[in-house]
Length: 179
Ligand SMILES: Nc1nc2c(ncn2[C@@H]2O[C@H](COP(=O)(O)OP(=O)(O)OP(=O)(O)O)[C@@H](O)[C@H]2O)c(=O)[nH]1
Ligand SMILES: [Mg+2]
Image (cartoon, rainbow, N blue to C red; front, side, top):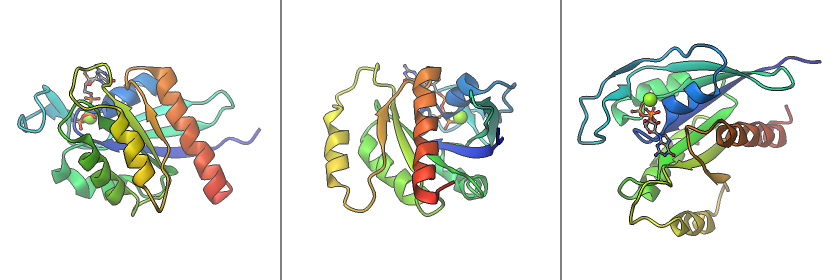
């Protein structure tokens, strides 16, 4: 058996569930850098990530996956560049219940595709009441001409949903880079 060590980055909107996803997946105690949220205009939640979250997931075949969480706030984008070095790819989480999730999705895709072009999208908070419909994602997918990034509807508190994103990212890397 060959043991691998993969690095997976979680990015996306403030409050989308990046820190929660790492907590749900990690088999070690998560190192988190959450601080009191002073940017209540962007999100009303109490805590927000201001550095790097780190956890580790061990897959059934023994593969170790390092899980790296980025801060959602754009003022920390210098950390995004640092975290993505040597990553297998990025999982972009978007909170469906925010105002105009598609413009946020475009923003994160445009930024992170320049760092690593292996991207999987997870749309979260589908259980929250909002006027946004899920049809906007099908329309968005249809409008993509260059690269078609796989998109899933997930709950960042649900380990099975998250494992689907990790698997998709690994399979994509296998296809793209023949790892
Ligand atoms: N209702 C609902 N809550 C969710 C879902 N996914 C995550 N959450 C919750 O959303 C809240 C915010 O999640 P965090 O993990 O702190 O978000 P984050 O992406 O790390 O946010 P920043 O670090 O501020 O960028 C937590 O209370 C999660 O439990 C979902 O699909 N539905
Ligand atoms: Mg966080």
